[in-house]
Amino acid sequence: MKIKVVLACLFALAFAAAIWNDAQKKQPAMPVNTSTDSNASPDDKANTISYVPITDDEYASIRSAAGTDSLFIYKFQTDDENINQIDCWMEHYVNGAFKETLASMGTSIRPNKHENKLYWSLTSVNDKEQMWIVSVRDEGGSSSSKGSIAKGAYLSSTWGSIIGSEKIIPEEPITLGAIVRKKEQGLTSFVPDPGKLINAFDEVYLLKCRFKP
Image 1: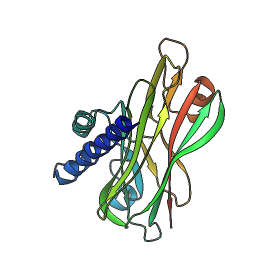
Image 2: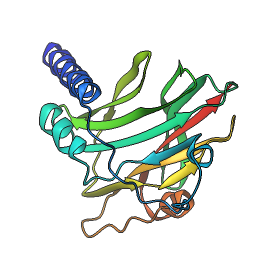
Image 3: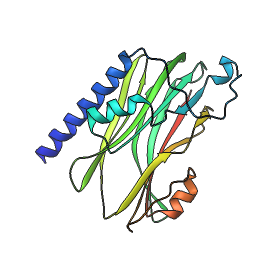
C-alpha cells in the first residue's frame, strides 16, 4: 500500500510539473481540427472547447514526464461573464449499463479571452490498478482531482476524443472523450459516438464537463 501511495504522489508531481512547464511556454497554439468557419469573427470563436490533437508537442512532453497510458488535452475560452465554473466528471459503464460516476470535481474559472486547458490522464500504477487525474488550468491557477480504477480482465482497449470543437452552452453537459475496453483480444474500432461505444464495448469511461454560472 505504501508503494502505491508513493507512486501516486510521484506521478501527481510529475504531471503537475509538466502542466506548469506548459504554462511557461510562449508558443503559438497548434491548429485544431474543427468545422468552425475560418472566417469567423473572434466573438464566434469564443466560448468554445476544443480537442488538442495528439500530434501537438504538449502530448509528448507530458507523457514523457509523467508516463501516462492515455492522455487527453482540451483548450477552452470563456468570455461570458455568466460562466464562472466548470464541473468535470467520469461516467463508468459496464456491459451497456451505467455503473457509477467517478472523478467528480468543480472549480471556478474567470471569464477571459485567453486559452485555458483541461487535462485528463490515465496511467498504470501496477498490473492491477490505474490512476486517473483530471486537471483544469486557467490564469488563476490549476485544480485537479485524482483516484484509481481497477484494470480488470480486459484484453484490448482504445481511447479517443468525442469532440473536435464544441460551443459552450451554460449548464449543458459536453461529452469530451472516452476510454473503452473489451474482454476479447483483437482490434478495437473507436467511433466518436458515446451511445455506440457503450453498446459495443464491455467497459466504457466517458469524460464529461459542464460550464456553469
